[in-house]
Image (cartoon, rainbow, N blue to C red; front, side, top):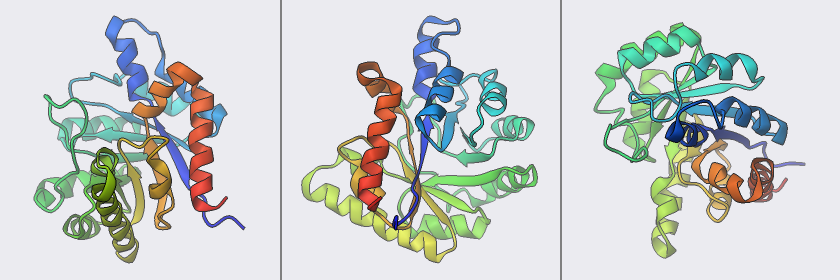
Length: 245
């Protein structure tokens, strides 16, 4: 018997990054999403940044309507972004921190410090039928704040774990494992993501309380060398090994 079914979401942002480097429509994020579906992913993630450096507004209806998979839309917690999400009504909306000058998301959302700002945004998204998640650090204070906001899902930031090595990586893994247990105790569904690769995914996938991994940059990069289907297949194989499937 399988120990658990661990879902894999593909973040297609960096297909859009390559497209945007030259303008035009190629390579199309929609095509990547359709190939990913055929390769067996469980969902598609796309980050609509305020500066539109990755996904564009016109990508959203295509991804939602042309791909028969749940769409997880990552956005900054601003009224503008929330209104776009309410208009398109993706399956899920993940609120993430965002700074214009950053290369990629640098850490988790400070839910505890931003609770008054987040509360009406979360309420508006949930009223529109979106499943709201919060991208946070593996920290009990942030987990409790997320639970108090009434969201059903948190996604734990795995970037520090992926960047660490040796004893430091073990410490980060223990922190994520403990946070996943705390999330389950608080009634939160636990996802994880950021920076995961072939050599780092298995210990995270083996954490019993984590039910979904969202991986993007690494898989899009590996697709250049081995193909998107093959990259997804290898990641799925490693995840399945980790959970005993």
